[in-house]
Image (cartoon, one colour):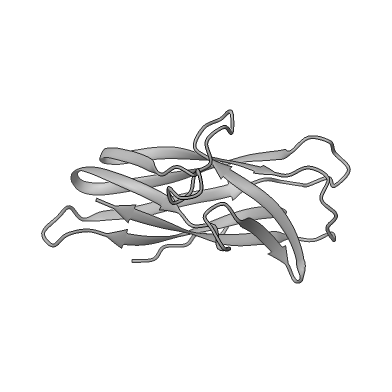
Amino acid sequence: MTWARSLGGALALLFGCVESRPALAASCSVSSSGVSFGAYDPVDAADTRGTGMIRLSCDQSVNATVALNGGGASSLDHVMRNGTSELAYDLYVDAQRAGVWGDGTGGSQTVSFNGTIVDRSVYGAIRARQRVTAGSYTDVITLTVTY
């Protein structure tokens, strides 16, 4: 199944979902608010931060794992685009932005969801001082839910 939700704001991420489950298992759905960064200032010395939310809702309790793809060569390659202009960013499992949320490869981590309705924050950071053109930048991340 695939889900996507559009977001407002100057910079935003959209999430889609792929579900992997055995027959006769719980039935689940995924929704997200995506990550909205607001305005990006290319001369600011600090990263621009944003937060989003992923919700897993199931008809029975599950022990699930959620992986995020990067859209590039690895789960660590995140780029928002506006035409041919690109803006690099990262997604994290924690507010301190220490653990990269990915697919478990290249030093990235997946995140556990345990229960019937579980919300998890997604923390993002756009790397500081990137030369980009003005405009709206977006990217689509695929979530893979395994239970």
